Length: 511
Image (cartoon, rainbow, N blue to C red):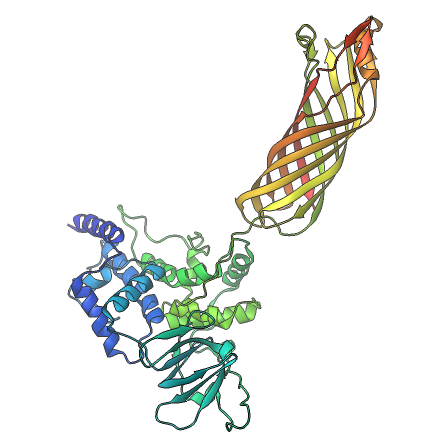
């Protein structure tokens, strides 16, 4: 029976995930009724708590060793279990659903309120004037006129329910205890009132509840490493962390059986980038989790705004997303050792059949200059000795050459330590000197050596992989210019039809 229950729950979960863009009438009515009950109803905070509650219900349903709550049971958040099952676990989708419900029904509307960028809410604020640099308003029935900098205001809700957005999304609004804590009364009309600064949020180190002392040194090191990753997205991390903590702690309570492998090991890395053991160390409460993260950021010295840290608990955040970064982001110099294989053709079938494949080796300096996080210029100077061609191992041209590749490097994906890249561009070969080696009756090939062009240009394509400071690469180059000048042999005009293909393998160390 437990097994049947498990599969039914899984099917319900799949169904709800598919049709989570709409809610039943009963669930809609529950949400509207709840929003009316709370005088300080905050949609962003409620969406965050709702996401965690929905995740908890689904986890309980999947646990075949515990009794699932009935659909009519009232959850701690104030909604029935059946209503919670209709919501997705994504905080963004939950908040979007809530906004749609409230906008369509028009049941809840903020009026006479000013939201500040630091998350503070000034209630019963009747805006009198919105100037170029400041906003004037009254509070309730008071005669005093207050003034505040326009740059400190996020949104103003007027008496008729209309709103004006100024600088950014509202971040975890909290009730203002007094207008004077954020602004000062305007001076007499005869003098221009000076805009008073908005009161700063409380210091992060003073957060109540669980502090960073509850996190081990290993977990702190995880956070440091994760935050320094070029692909780290603070917005997504802080939104996903509360749900990840709830899921991890619920999974830890499931016993090991023949049908279940039990809790995940503490050293397993989760989708959020942290290990199971570290996620267990965090509290489940959004407010306590927010306090912990504030203390962590303060101790690590990371450059995150207070408002963004508050968003970890309340679900609010700004609209900017960090681009996924690859590569190390700076100019780098290194050394490269390479080995090339050469496929040479004269362009005359009767001769080319007897030309052997040859090789060369060398090394030199490389230089990487980034343009963006994904695009950079790769160049350098490498000194090679190579056999341009050999004829039946009896004759050939051997030369010293400087290779100067000028390549654009593109990184499709990766992080600061390990990444795959593609290259394309040109390669310049500067011929320093060469010699013909072979028996005398093969002087025809010696004529080619005498008429060798001193500068080649080729088109190059390649790819490679960087692991911290060591890189491995492959490069294909085909010539675009003539390799030899035309010459006469036994009164016959010999035109250059030659072509050269290079297949290069290299190992690079970047300083």
